[in-house]
Length: 137
Image (cartoon, rainbow, N blue to C red; front, side, top):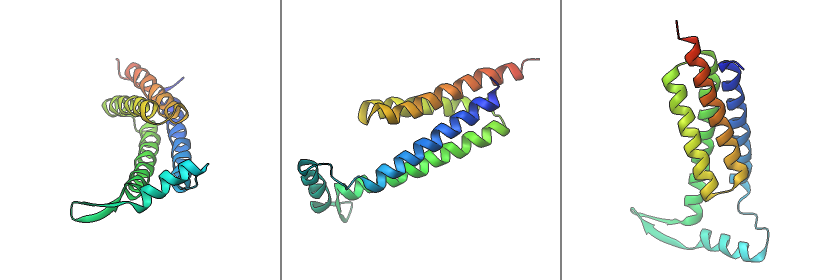
């Protein structure tokens, strides 16, 4: 498989990850049961002072979720661009970042989300290996 195709595969995987994360970020307040509903209500209603503002853990959760949508979308776009204009060092850095992200997602979230990042990272690192062959003359 050529580096370009591997990077495009990684880009599509990360775009799918972005879509799934967006759905999760927009629906996390829909409690599957009463106990979870109690936790969600507490996260939204219990406020505390932080850096001069009254905030809640629910607001932090929203903010981190929306920030990650932007990060995941940016990664998808960068992978697509890299497929057309390959930069070996950047491919390596992005591949390692995706493996790191996948590990964090596996440890702190769930395997389904982690699989997208890990597979995209593996695909990106395989593209890095293939791109190396392109530059050996």
